[in-house]
Image (tube, rainbow, N blue to C red; front, side, top):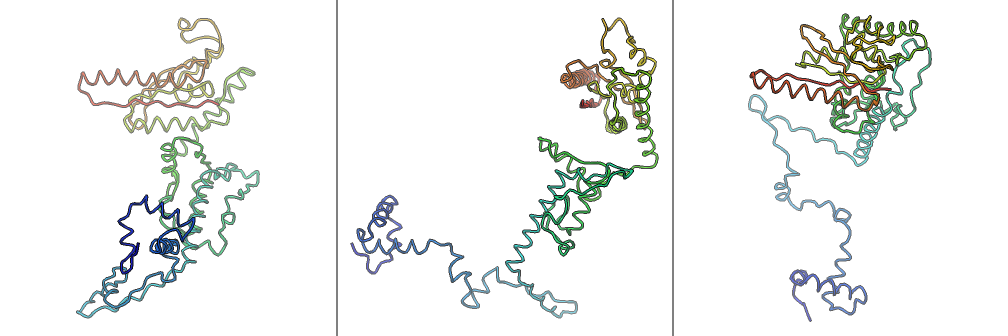
Length: 387
């Protein structure tokens, strides 16, 4: 079978692929077993296995001025005419970017992302949690720029971040300063263990980046300090008044009280009609006294084994750690009804009780407002984790 005077590639293109594969198997076993035309065709396939950019003729160059003029990748825009009708001078050609520059820029970007990731996971280990400076604070090794391959000569070189932390470009110095302000301040941020990506991103977008520091007014700082002192003094009083009695104190976690105050305040501003709080034993007495404003004489009576409503509770036990209460609080002219639901001994059911109470309130409120054509309000639940 001869193919002289014909382009064999055109002939092979119309042949069954199965037939070509069969011939190729025979060719691999014994090249002389196939026709010379097929043998030449298969030899050409084997010599063209490497990618085109490894060819000595790559990159392809233009052969004449006409081809270059029609190639958009080689076109240069004409200089815009300046004022007065005279053409503006042509811009100087941009310096060529070498392969080494590309590799270095890519390496910087990767190392910067790894540095950001390390601060997100371990930045809290370098937080300033010792305001009195009683112990020396050591920076973990993997939070240092040297650990990630940046030298002193690289510290002021711009690095591409691609929008991470709200920045497209930043020097290594700017990046580290921002990360330390976010993660190594007086409050440690530890959230990367959260499984839900949406929750993790919610926290990240509000805490990470430039200009994310929370500023308090002088009155706001005094209000926070007042609630912390009230919470701490409450625990000290109970410790002295009821020595040896289980009270599930909030010692070390007194900041929860001003935090709950903020939830109530801003919830009222955002239209929350009722706040339902569900929590376990730890800190319940402190919340009753300093957040729910339950009368202290009632708390002391219950702490001594009595009950504000004896007919509601039968028998004895750790009643004081289970009872809840309801009250109204007003912040900046917004009145917020609140309920601290009673918790069961099986603490894992506290969430179910709180959420169920909120759902019931919502359904009832929704039905009433539909009947009276009144605008819908918002109920929300604040769940406080135990130990």
